[in-house]
Image 1 (cartoon, helix red, strand yellow):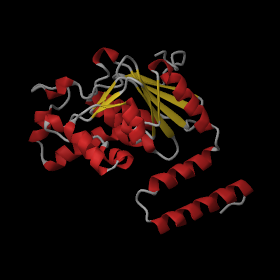
Image 2 (cartoon, one colour):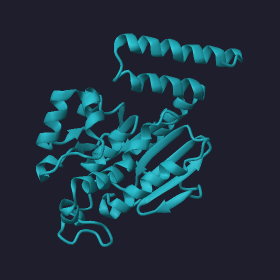
Image 3 (cartoon, one colour):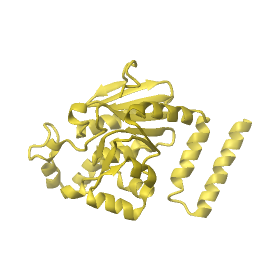
Image 4 (cartoon, rainbow, N blue to C red):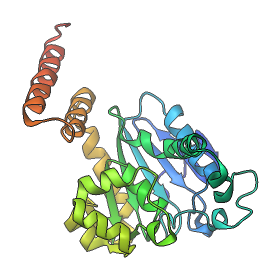
Length: 267
């Protein structure tokens, strides 16, 4: 796929991640296609940094990847006894206390948490393999547009691990308990047609049309006033945790804020 941000100077470009900003749209690109955009702690630290340096003008964040695969999951070197140079190996993590393991994994998770902030809408453009950590990174975004060759899979359980990079909550929310459990425990592939039917993807398109489809969606998202989008996103996110009556009250409060804002009346 041609890069939509190829003519823009990167705000940040390191550890297999590039951030470019074009007014209200930021593009985060995974840039290690030779390793199928395998993920490492360094990549996660950079993704977390992206969330911290996003300009306030940004309303839509597009997450995309170079090459034929979105992300084939963890860098396999992490599974070796020596691990990745300069990083704790899995064995090193296992030797730590419960608190140390918790702190380490919480740090990894920071790369996956900021995509659902209320002030932005994030779109993952996913082609080819999105496996394990790659699947969870796509799930971290608000919306997913996929190429017709996409192959999602959650392989952690088959490796004796669990999905721990924030993917289980959105997966259950999108597809329900039974299908989420089956996808995770079997590690099978979920392809484009099923992804759309199950609610994992908003839209599937031919691979050559993926960037264009994402640009069209981003433009549509920008058509509505920003404050209304922020309030609506907060309402929809919160609906999962609220009762029906609590959600009704949240709607009323949000609408009161919007009416006052549109009328120019301060609270």
